Amino acid sequence: MKFFVDTADVSEIRAMAQTGLLDGVTTNPSLIAKSGRKMADVIAEICELTPGPVSAEAVSTDFETMLAEGRYLRGIAKNVCVKLPLTEAGLRVCRTLSDEGTPVNVTLCFSANQALLAAKAGATFISPFVGRLDDIGQDGMGLIADIVQIYRNYTFKTEVLVASVRHPVHVLQAAKLGAHVATMGPATIRMLFKHPLTDKGLEAFLADWAKTGQSIL
Image 1 (cartoon, rainbow, N blue to C red):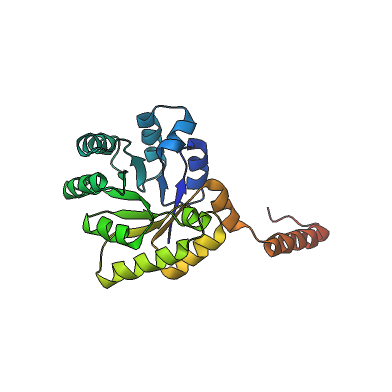
Image 2: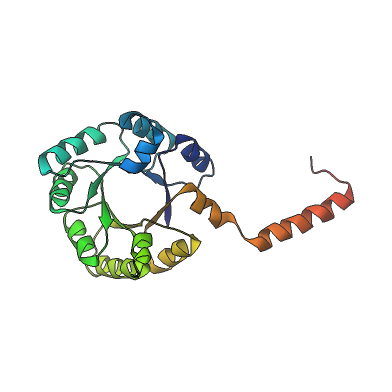
């Protein structure tokens, strides 16, 4: 499974990239707004920090303007992946950009039927929002299972990018189901490192080592 970090905070992305575990970045208009910077500048800087795909989202809702925005965004850097909403206009733009060789991340997916349409439109990634479905009492991971099965049935090349990930259990469940990517905020990624028994074991090892009075270097 690939790990993307969901943020526009360049310092966080730099720190995550240094772990060697980062495969890409996802952003959205809300995250860009929090940065307080010009979108093109933020995306360009992020693209320099990781060779993986960096999702940059169009903000218009009509076909012509959304297409123009998508073409502009892809020109920022070679690893930009244009992010589009799962609407009729968004999927029309997805098909056009995909045919032009531009990778596309179709976002705001909440049903398997929507995911099927995105794959038929040539999406590189589909982003189902599991946390938001859980919030309204629906089964977010059940949606992932459905999409993975449908894509396997028809050998679609679209990758399932699990979004709105709230905790490590979402990551584990998505990996067991065979999702290709999980995108998470930096705090959630850091949770994956943590286990109380790891901390306890390390503390005991270090205490025993200190008693020897030795130094490796």
